[in-house]
Image (cartoon, rainbow, N blue to C red; front, top):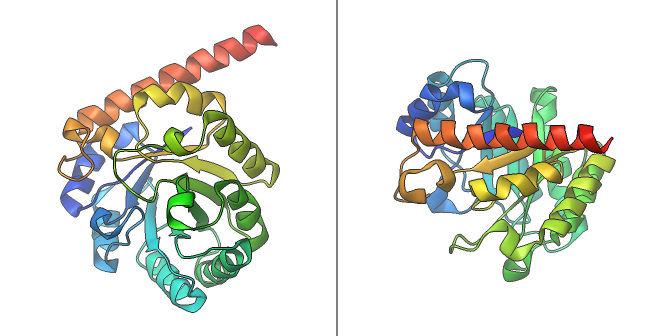
Length: 251
């Protein structure tokens, strides 16, 4: 399982750089503009320069409206600015067909510029609260649009979490559908260390965190701390070892 950590500033990216051995992807977002709020192109470039070259950068394009052309241009901007993973929050898409149209435009715009980029179709565990597409529709949307990964996060950051809206069994089904479509499955949404056992068991490929590695567990007022990143990674590795051992015993 890969660990994606989301700094909201260049200063926090330097903290991530100090913990680089413990994380896999540095994710650039702007939390005050939404769950998947987009940061400025120059911030993406500065964060790219601040972290080790072997650590890929992920950039959110925003909690986007159903405006395929606008979103495609924004996604290209993120790729040009140095992001390897391009994440699009399908906030304003109310049907799978709308979501597919948006993501097809993103895939073409990004991959024409950088064929090796990863395009991530992101939906919301609490989709019922904002009227966006059903979480379990995301893997099929991502597959039909030509994406590389499907992701679930939470849209409304009010203290509720991923498993408050989508049960572990439903998340397992999300992962199964993603893998059946040859996609990576990413899960986020106020994920805590206590969730890692479940996330490992269901086969999650990427876990995204911010609050869990911020002081006080506060994604808004707290700052990412290298020691917290290291501790979170240690828990990830522990669960991976235990799961591997249990699987070996079972087989």
